[in-house]
Length: 190
Image: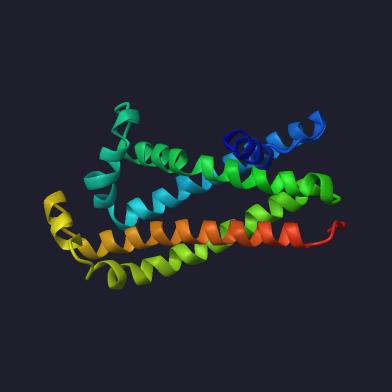
């Protein structure tokens, strides 16, 4: 039972394929990691501008193991990259594993899908900016937690928390939508 389950999971994560297909999938996954990492850098630069306290009171502590004493803005960029590169790697890997044997111009399709995912992520992040204070400001325990962190500008903190949560939701929904499109669409050229 355990061996059969492990085999099924392994085949799902790494289906049998020829070396050239696996190599192309790996290259597309690395491209996805780079795209997502760069997005994370820009994302966190923007959110640091809105609420530096989100980083100085929380994120810097979460990533203290990789704090090498660089200036704050560079550390924010490092956090943004480290928090997102792996999402792009995984998303592009699965998109590529479906696209490569199925579509003409699979690399183009994967990159278009990644752009759509980024667009959806940005939209949900923007919605989170506006929804964050309303959704998080009245949650039990949040005010006390922010007081214990020493947060002064709670509205900005809630806005940035909303942006981050919205971005997570947007990226997951965008990836799910693109995977669905890839799986359901017949193998044709763009």
